[in-house]
Image (tube, rainbow, N blue to C red):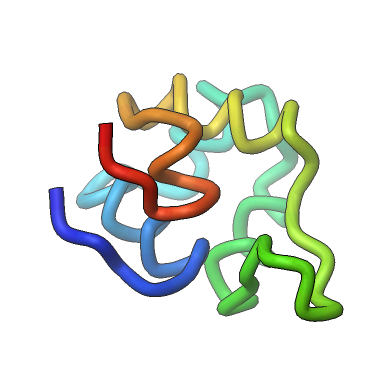
Length: 77
């Protein structure tokens, strides 16, 4: 899988052609929460921008079939 630079880009890649509604439902999240993450261009790297919780990253990773490490940090396998 390619290495998009930030969380929102990796999340968009992971979601692919699925709907925000479906992914949010599968992850047990509110659609607005997912939309904020998709539009935030956030980094989880300590540069003053708060990213999603670990539980949220895990839920989204499971719902989209990617690893939590890749989704959160772009770490390859």
